[in-house]
Length: 254
Image 1 (cartoon, rainbow, N blue to C red):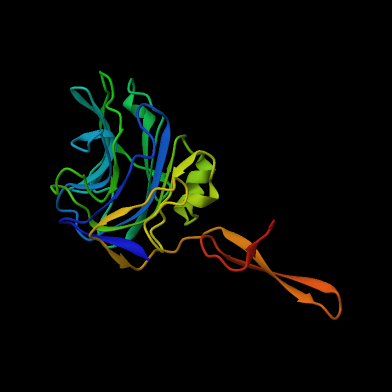
Image 2: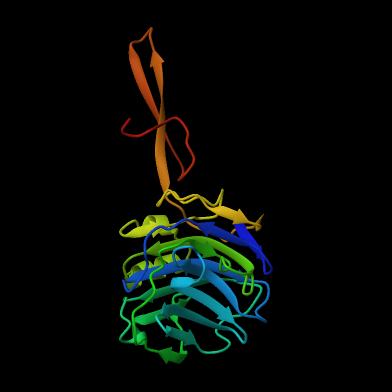
């Protein structure tokens, strides 16, 4: 199941995974919006103490534009899509890459269903970026409930590199971030729970409910059981594939 956010107080928080500041990165997620009439935050990084924004954040705003923002000392570094880029009541795949440069905001690229959007605003940072040394949150910002998400999130992935065009295309047709482990730092899939198998971090729920998940193609792991026939002196290995995260029998290589 995916996670549904009520637009009021719902949020999922994670302790710091890494300090996301002025470095290449990619963020991938599936998004479903119930309403787009107000500013809403999909992901936020906090500074130490969680009292303000650091690292970066992704926001949606009326009338339908998406922005990737990097807080700076005394300003912002950001890029916003054109209006009417997305609509409510349908799942879409959102992916954002950033080359880590604050000297050219054109290093930020926003993709909707594998197509790069057009941009209405590109603002270049002029001072030092604020590090995301605190917690990370999905569906809002930790220090207030002024911009909570009214919608659903699923299949989150975050890498500290810019993904290739082929990897971006695969994610947009439903492949899980877990297929692309190179530099993957965070991937709470939100299907069976909110904990992250990549970073080992435990998600803290502030509300949210489970809801139907979009179709996602997930890796499988092969497990086997053994049958021992004492009479015949024979050992038989029975192999079967199960979705990642489920445990049945012994993993291959035991």
